[in-house]
Length: 420
Image (cartoon, rainbow, N blue to C red; front, top):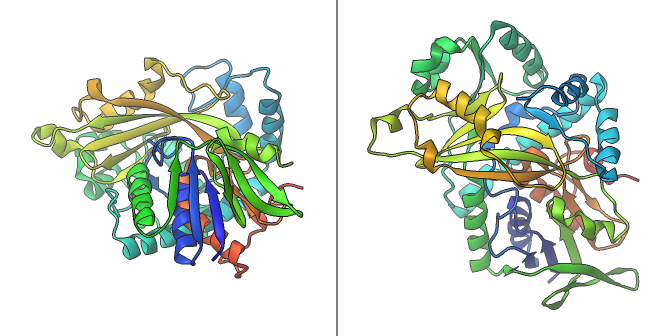
């Protein structure tokens, strides 16, 4: 039985642990935190959104980033620093901002998201784990006629690629989600993707980790990895602060804070943190306001604020900030969320009791993760899933498990190859 070690117990690493367990591996997962899903998976948007799988690097992105230097309230924010890794990454990102590369990256991303959604449905059926899943689609809302026109034109690329979508008026959007009835006059139009959905990535990850642990996967929390040990040119063990662990195969599924480990093995991958903010707002089930909370997740496209119902809470997320590894936040960082949610869902939730959070998305210049073997036999990387790690996780896990087994992949893997 192959001894396989996964570094990282976020949604990507935990999903891979499940697939490798399913394939018959002896799996150990190493996680520096005390629980799974304590990093980027902790409080993300919750959207399972193939219908929103556009590459961030586009012809419009450079202008938006430049404007953010002088204009507040931007959804994309660039904060220059002396960090050479930021400038190196940014140059690579700008190199992807052509129309041709944006289309190519978007279509590869969409293919992965669709495949991953199918894998998520399979995993859920096989395990029965709950995660506050809502499978009623997602609404992408536009407040201005001109933004709706631009949005529908933009969406055509995914529609032509097989994404099911409907173009709705504000009143029709309220028909999909009655919570929008009080604000339908604010909505110029909406794109409804009925096969998209939402769910709690943290709950999914922790329940899946529990399922894996009950079936033989060893999770070692509070364990810091120092190095992968190589003998006779191939992986032999993982050195940690708790001692060495024998391994035939090691897969790095770390977030941005684990990139130095790969760098130590000659893999300085262009994965850089892009900070996002979220609020998790409690809903009082006995209050009439709870009836006005969204029952279908979505995105306020004019403000780039995502929202989703997660059990008795509402998750709000916004902003993509290029500001290094700083996870600090201030109250004003949540202003766009409050404004958006307050107008779309008036009177919903106790914002004074909201849990505020800032996380670091592990972004690549293309928006596509790196999923491939390294030059060291037995050492693999599955990193850089960015802002769609929840949507991509289960498909990425199956692709990596097939790569390790030497099976033909379900998707072309060239888009996810490591840089030369």
